[in-house]
Length: 154
Length: 154
Image 1 (cartoon, rainbow over the protein chains, first blue to last red):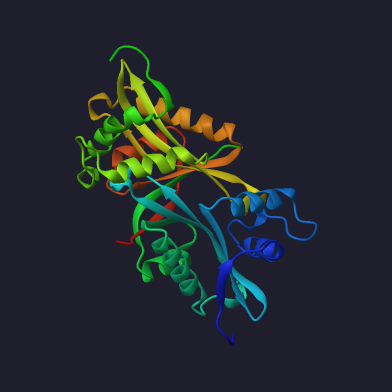
Image 2 (cartoon, chains in turn blue, orange; image 1 turned 120 degrees about the vertical axis):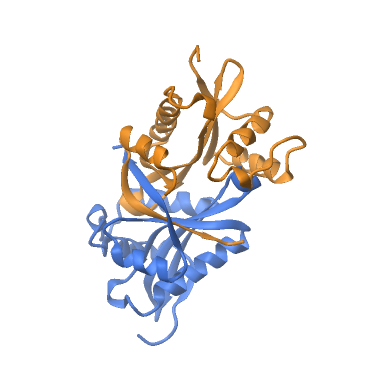
């Protein structure tokens, strides 16, 4: 790897590459459908995400390729006397480029976005089998202070 | 306890009672400031929450009193071919009314809201010391499939 990744808001043209990143995941990749034409669900979700100022879909670009992605959502809460929280989800770095510090730079970019919006904190969950991710978040200063629960509605 | 709680969107007039519920919490209650006039932060957060269709601040009312609250946020994601997720936060039931099934009814109401919006799942985190909450979520069918991370930005 040469050069430095640039992080920015995703554009429509990035969408196929983002879906490739989401599919490049041994835990949940099987849920995705790569290849063109993209499933309508991706297009609708992309429109909904980009239409709402509370959501930013981020990509990392390196030498013309999309090599990382994450979504950050800013949520106003009453708790902490009206503190806004940032929720980070769908964090992915291209598997061929892991362990090059890209994830850390991506998280720094997301944290800066949260600070710029006046968030009191950032939070995220990782599924229990993602032990590498858990080590990573601990290393960069996140506390595993919570248990995360999900319930499937389908 | 007699009668059945009714769950509905919070109104401005409910705000002092909601803040009382948030403060009625041994883990994080110390972060709140009850009593009138309410801290400006609560008013601003309430306006931001109610102005955004992606957020619903819910209250439970019983015999004219606000006895429960939670916030649900609907977030569009690319993952799962464009699945919308519901995030539940700031769940509180008045301590004098615990173990009367109110929390379960509140969660059923929130789950119905998530289904009505077409969410593929609901998710939440509880901090590790909240063992009663963890037992509760497991009992009503949530899976503790994730580790939750937070980082304070203040």
